[in-house]
Image (cartoon, rainbow, N blue to C red):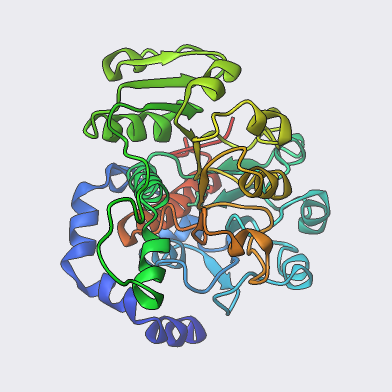
Length: 361
Ligand code: DGY
């Protein structure tokens, strides 16, 4: 506890959150705060391991008030060996998308582990079958980050199509005068935008895109989405989406079905002027690099990539037509705080044999 308090003192942003109107606002706005949870006496003996020190404090405090919480002391991912040691004998694990939770971790945990709460909407870092086959419950954090990720998707789309980073570099290096076609990019107006995966985030992106006067929004996914109608979005096959879209936006979850969906063959089906934006999970970097270098497509904007983190000397980082951000889609303090709180509530609910705010079924 003492160590944790010291750590949190050092992370000033969380002190700000604790004491500012922001947290009050969060408390008022979040539907999660309406959930009931057990009294501390019931939960006092439960042991929880948290894999990162800088989890927003409202989430940590919920757990600390009720349970025996151990927290990895650093703001970088817990080493595998430490995770394998700390997981032993805990009732719950609070993890992040940087922690690989596989059979080895679950075997080390033993029978006591009842719940895993990941502070993420994606759970491709977790072996869900292995978790479920052991009767362990799994919580995740949908919805609370939808606005943040949609906003970032639009920001990345504009940064890529209007060449913002390249233009900034030019101003530092060789801007001589305003010039008619210098630094021209593609506009969204009159364009066809294809959204791959039309879930919560895809729909919110489409909603925001409408204000840019795009000509057509098309999407592809496993099923028709009723929400598409009011957004004027039309479901098409993946091939049609690739061949028609000026902008291809990937917002789908990473599953065996979508893994490496963007490869040499799919990039080859896209228009040469196409701009590819991915804010969901990393795809095949080598194929994307080839597509950008050979002019198969015009440009790409990535918030996610393989591997993460991308080494600073990676060839994708040298391409002018590739804008890369370090997986910051959900990085607003509001979203990250809500994610932490929701993860804590998922864990507490499962430990109490209650309905979790968001459980992977
Ligand atoms: C998630 O939660 O899965 C996002 O990729 C990061 O917030």
